[in-house]
Length: 224
Image 1 (cartoon, one colour):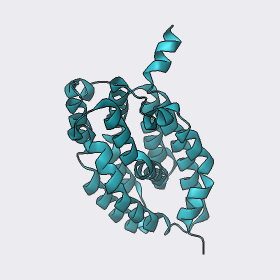
Image 2: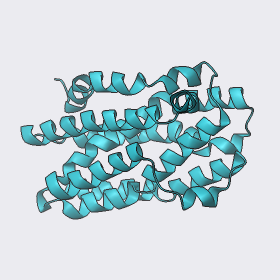
Image 3: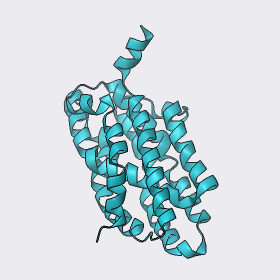
C-alpha cells in the first residue's frame, strides 16, 4: 500500500527540482562559493529559523480537538527546535562576522515571503498546511546539509564551529523525518492531503527563491 508520505514526495518532485536548480547548489558542491555567500545563506536561515518555534506553536494552538495527536506531536517539534537560531548566529560569529548585526537585521524579500506565507497558511487557511513547510525544510536538510558543510569548509577553510547549524541538521533531521512520516501518514482526509501537497509545492518554490537570492556574483553582474 502506498503511503501518503510517498505520494507527497512524488507529487512535489517537480517543485523540488526547481529548488535544487538554484545555481548556488551546483556552485557550492563544486567549491565555487565565497565567504560572503555563506554569510548570506546563514543570515537567510536565521530569519526563517527564528520563526520555527512560533510557527509550530501557532499550528498547535489552531488545531481542532480531533487533531490532538498532532498537537502533541507539535510539542515534540518545539522541544527539538528551541534555540536553533542561536546556533546560526554562533556560526556567523565563527566566520568572522558580527552576529548581533545579523540578529537586528531585516530579512530579505524571499525569506520574508516564505515566513509570511507560513503564518498566512496557519491563520487564514488551515494549520495543517504547515506540515508542507516542515516536509520541505527537513527533507532538504537531510539531502544536502552535511554535503554542503563539507564542500563549504573545504572551499573556505573555516573551522568546525562555523558549521553547527548545517552539520547538526544533516544528522538530527534524519530522526525528524522518520517522525514526520509517521505523522503525515495519519492524515486520511483527502482535503488534508491535498492541502499539504499544495503547501509543500509552494514552500519548495519559496525556499528555492531564497537560494536564488544568495549569489554575490549574480548581484555584481546585475549592478554592472
